Length: 494
Image (cartoon, rainbow, N blue to C red; front, side, top):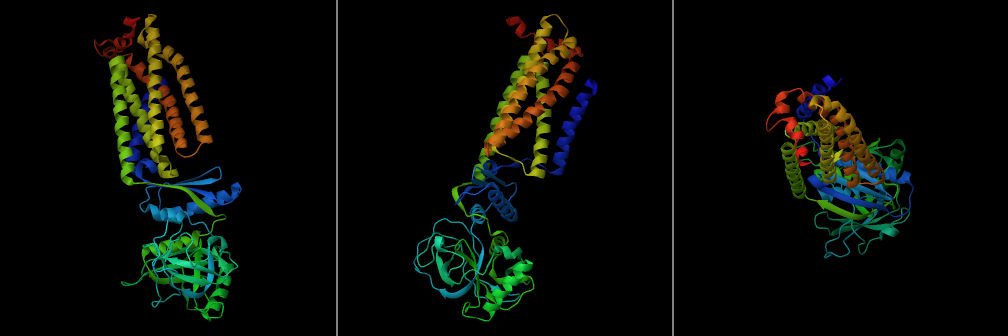
């Protein structure tokens, strides 16, 4: 096994690296290395773990629908941590993620003007809305209002704490671009919630001058409930004189389409002057609008792509510089054995790159700045393993043994120390991973992987390589390069 372990390890390292490059895999970068958005969401009341878990799944569905690669959504105590690396429209993503109220369908009683036409810009809140539209399969005459987004309490509208499903309310329509109230709607009690929706999707224009639409599939029971509301509004009864149904989330009207037929067969088409973004946002609201608890943003952070790239570039430069200095020192001190260190680090690096790339592609594992720090720390641990082995070889040679006879004996003693050191690193990494969240877990994970690779490479690469060099007189006796010369450096200093 000793004879064949060296070529097997080398072939494994080179083969996995080539396969990774051919497959186009590469490590997925975290928020701090490629930019993105970060938000901490806190429930407005005490909830159990089941409710938090359900909320995380709904948020994850929303994020997946946004097309965010490698999101990190986890719980920390009673909070939900959402990290969206690489997301381009950070503000929109955070708004979609933060939509926390129950999705409701209310009949529109009356359309009202804005309370204050000169109202100032509205502050940061939690949802993205869509324009008014028409609930039908064909409605070219639908009157479109400006896109809307959630806001704080607005004069002339119902306060959020009084926005109860069984009450008549006045809720705003808000411009997404200007952040101003464009209108208010007097709405009747809620007749249905987001549970009636089975799925929803944005549909591209069918003609050259057409607009995007939203196709909504209803559940079996939901279709019955929606048809009751649609029939009431289509006939313009006293409870729905405008023939419109408002789709409300978090105290803001997302869309208020006009009903143009009394009955639907499990599918509803919402059309109007939708842009692609408007249609996709409304589809997300309809599909993943209801959470089991209201979540409030506690802190929000965005990292620009430029800053992330700068961090990545600085980390790579620092890592390569440090690695280069270590390699130069090891070659100068240990001569030919320093070359073993160089190739050993190359083997470890190829295996680590391939493994991290594979996990990033298959499981969404993201390499963060903290994870990169864990890898850099592990380089020191790996170099220490070589130093321990080489110093053991020195001890054997000082006792009069040859290099060939010293390798196995020196390695068996050194490997106990290497094993103890790496197991200590693994225990520390495991505890950090289990007891912490966020970037610290990334540090622990990559430190643990690197420690395992160190044990593997030390046993299957370093030992057979040194044994091979010990059989070659050039590497052992060369005047300035020989292994014996390198191992004898400290002998003269004793």
